[in-house]
Image (cartoon, rainbow, N blue to C red; front, top):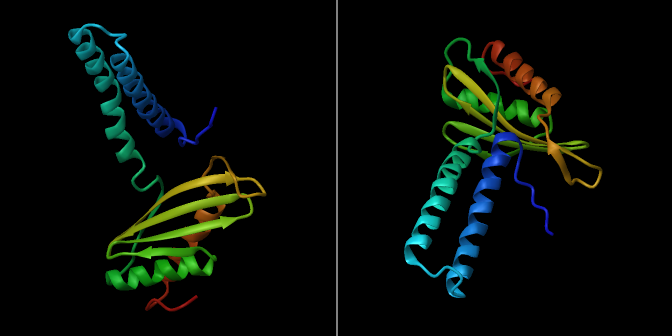
Length: 174
């Protein structure tokens, strides 16, 4: 049996429902193809039940995994442009040796894989507020994901660095 990682908590339950629904759909096809379900009304009823069970799970799973778990927010003091805020966020990530994966007009995505932690941090910002969202994992020495876990220490350092840089006049380098 192949074990697959379906995430954690609510996300894992939703992913499991979607996977099981797909398996049920395949089994239904097998039953019909081999004539094991003789009546069309029984097939329609079974298909409707599978759809009612799987469809809502797939919709919620997409919404739950878009950015990750909320990891905090920071108010931007004074008046800063979004470009200045982005620069501050990038400096904080690079200063803590996170890889900057992408930079967009309203978000920066950072990635860390260090010792027992792996994390993707999505930082959504505006000129007034910065929100942090994280998908984190505890990993073993080989880098294999063991269990979902937020790297709280790393996140606290990133938040402190962003706040420290923002509190300086201008957006001077650390």
